Length: 165
Image (cartoon, rainbow, N blue to C red):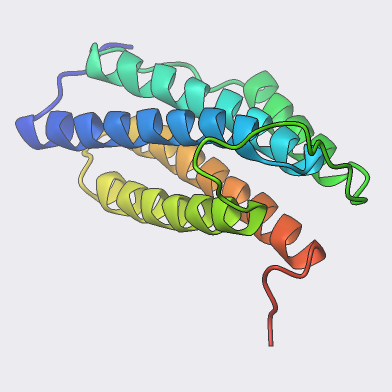
């Protein structure tokens, strides 16, 4: 299905496009910097899903409404379940050098803050769109961003990095 975007819709999608690119860059960089293999896998999995989000945003910007099929939903859910069900032991790769010398906790804190922000910007974007189908697509992306935040939160909690009182 083809759509014509308003100037405001186009501007909001351009913002989301830049947010998705930042997420991709962060997950890619942090997958290489993290010392814990479980965190590395979370970063790699989330990076792939962020790439799908970027492709979806690019399709919308080109005026095409992508088809959101069940297989995509199932694959995203399976990827998230696989990373959450991995052994929560600490498999460390100490030989890997870190570019910015960030600890795994600092990496997680930055990623969690980023996901909170990106999820919030999707909330605003969703409310500004006229087309229900596009709103549903953006809502789907927002839910996946929330799942990314949840996976990071659960990882942090399991490692004693985030204590819920």
